[in-house]
Image 1: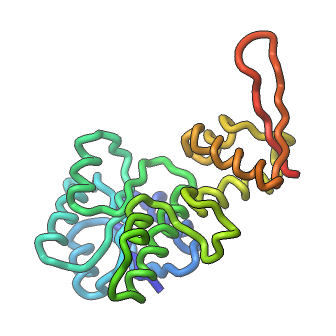
Image 2: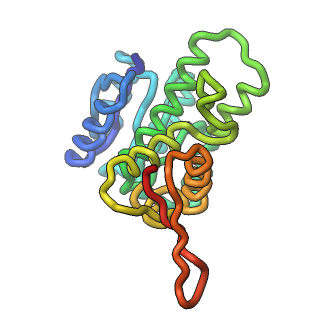
Length: 224
């Protein structure tokens, strides 16, 4: 079980992230805190594996906590959850070793993908003393393979695949477009289209091509 601490000053956001976390198997919430003083105490006493860290706290900055963790040589991985979209902040976060960066507001599917990608790497590193280059490259690129290569195609992320497929299976719409799914899941349209093409090859979905009077034809998809 991966121990998690949430650092977030907004009670509503704290509750949402806590509920999201409970929906992802393999994670346990050690504690949710609203300030850096308490976060440091929990860090020393509980030693969480993963921290979901907000940047903007009252009169404090989550980046200072990240820097403190690194300066103390403490073993913890960080996923930043923040409304800060600035390239400067994102670059700084990755330079200090965050494993992912979620921009508020985000959907559960993106949250789940971040946690499951982390869990896949965490479990593999925990159970291994050495790693081959091809496997390391897979983790660094964010691509996660399944146990059975016949069940999945190289170069695709299985969690993104399942997020798209689950949305189609829900059947809220008669037909889905790549644009609609991209908007619902907060995933790039070009990425969604790649997965839809894969599902079509697997004969899991049908594609309908609609030709309008002007512009490119529209591709619509539904469950086979």
